[in-house]
Image (cartoon, rainbow, N blue to C red; front, top):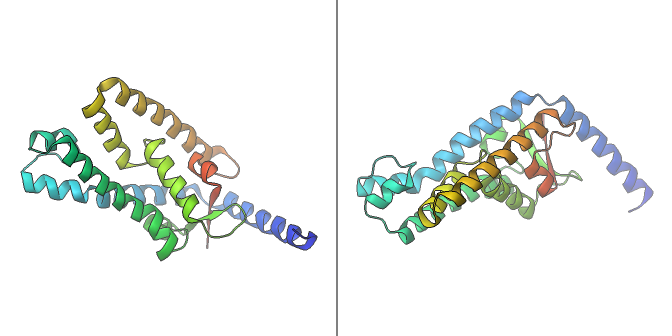
Length: 199
């Protein structure tokens, strides 16, 4: 990297850091709530459809689909389909439709970028999504499916441990957004991204 490129990169980082610090927390909260609800509704579609076909009750409770007649293998297939939809919402949309933005982030006027300011890469978006689903269990409706599948296949101890650990990590991650100067949640740290206002 030349001295000119290094200076330009530092200026860009200073500008983005300033925009992060000036970005209202309310925008992050709006984006999170919107994406949690919209992404959750999209992810629940396969379970809703299958639940209505077999006459199961509460679709959020996977055990009702088992008692309604699905095998564990069939249930796993339906849950995997919900993960594909979640992946499309949180990875493909911000990669291909609106760079760095889910529906919630677009509504809030914020976007995800790499640390050097370039558009968020497929790898980074995949890491963010996977970390939210499989580690930060408060941040994704799909996490509840993981917990319930663990409950149904291996007993309560593993699912409880997963939920408790994920909950603790979620709290730390949220505190970083509210208290850290760069406002980078743990999924941003893992993916090498940050979120800033694009207005």
